[in-house]
Picture 1: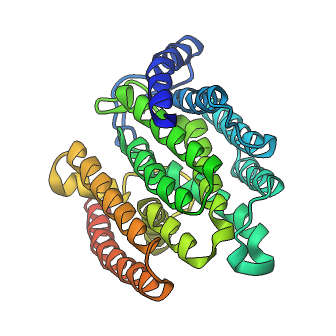
Picture 2: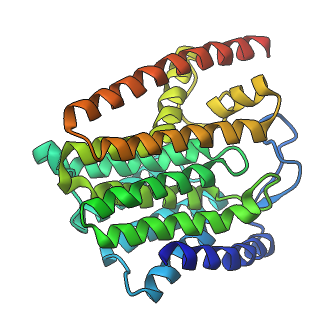
Picture 3: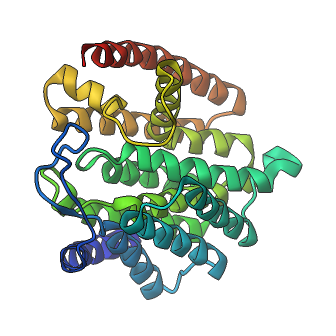
Length: 324
């Protein structure tokens, strides 16, 4: 029910958020170069629709999370929207992400398998997920599609652990993103924007944090659900270190850019990465039901495969850089 209500809410709210973005001129404008792949101004207000759809759904079902978690999501959305409008300094963005993580901790979320590091780990998780979603959100339908898959993968993991509130939040997140994708699919007519990317990152961190009290097996499974996001974050860090480029700032050397260049089509790139996300989520469901040792072996094997794939993409990205 959460998914269906959120889907309908997302379908209704996304065109409204698009109109608000156009009216207020909160849009992403083409830069006349290679950094922007769209050719007309696109509203950056998709995050308002996604968060609104999640809130409406959970309100209708009387399953709203604690004020701490709502505050974390609201802070991320607000900070991201401010960044979309004002281009906030990196320090302020990081402070907002840390603040969101602290609010999640205030709401009782811990990665208890890490012992005394369980609370700081949630803060780090919030920072990592917000930046990972923001990095992957550079191609029509990609962040929304992967976010939908990740939330749907996390829902049964939460159900198996008796986390009813987490299940409702996961399904509402997936439904809201699916509704948003109606206008975000290629060619996109609205983007998540930094507000939506940060809010989605915090939502995913809250869902993983809800599994934090259930041991390593649940955490390893949750990590697989976020596998493509983690891959893009690590890939970006690695290639920028190799190229001696700053970590902040945009470029067109992301994994999805390299795949699009090699396949000749951005839609194919998006569909390929979403398929990888689905595979990773399916493996997460296996890991969530088998003993810890074989589950850890699956995670290690998946990580090794990702490293090998990443090395090939990194080589292709470097060739592209030298060619330009």
